[in-house]
Image (tube, helix red, strand yellow):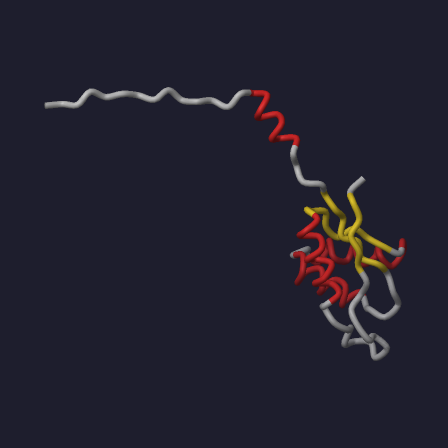
Length: 113
């Protein structure tokens, strides 16, 4: 004896609901690295590679920008992730190539404009 089969129609989400969900994107934040004279380019490039996965050419470009302009955006992400990355920069430690380096570089987060 075979049982009757029933099919359940596909329930598609209303377009209005899809639009509302798409608009609820989390606010984005920049991780900003600040310049100082107590860290070498090598330190900055190495830190950016280890913490952010930036390749050497991108790291050199960012190190140059922070040196010349005083700050550089190294990542734009969610607030929670930006806070984590800022804290990792602060915990990275001193530049072993410079005796006067006493600690990590400064970083902050700011809302994306």
